[in-house]
Length: 244
Image 1: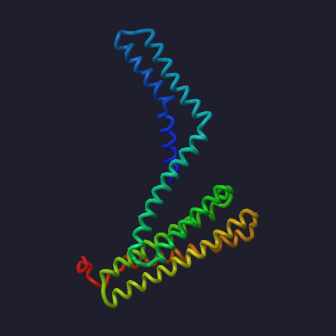
Image 2: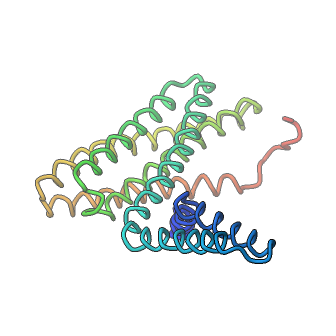
Image 3: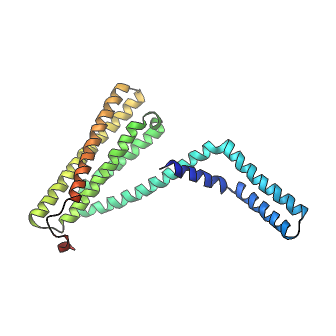
């Protein structure tokens, strides 16, 4: 989510508000009607009242309700992004059933549960304000883990089109990816539970240690992603057209 998106949403809500838009449109229409008939005092009065009434409503909302509107815009955009992400995760979970390996789909379910509970607890206890860096680390690890599960599915789909030593190599790489993401999930789960306990107790020493542990977990996930990226760009030792 960008600051520009929030600003655009706030401005749209301000200008598109019925209390702002309708009086101004009515006022302008009345003024145009008055002009068309050569000047009508009543239409002029209605037009001026409408335009200034809409501007007054707009100004009062800016002065008195801007903070509330900004928060609502932020929440609406965040909810939209959350819905889109959940739809993508639902699709991935459904796709992972195709690899006939329950570890991958169970891992994704576990990760989603830990991630959702973590954010619910953070919001309930306002931890997202007090510990933004640590929460950002959890988010990055979650996204990296999802990417690893996506890669494991791609490797499985590729292995289905291969034979012999090439297929064995592909499956071995997939197994390594799954092993690493399972370890990341377990470490993340443990660290999140400890974080929530330490944060409520305001134990800064242990929280500092957890930040370091999350840093290391994130580095492991990033190294896995880098290795997967290198594999993805490596020249294959077979002709892809043979498997179309």
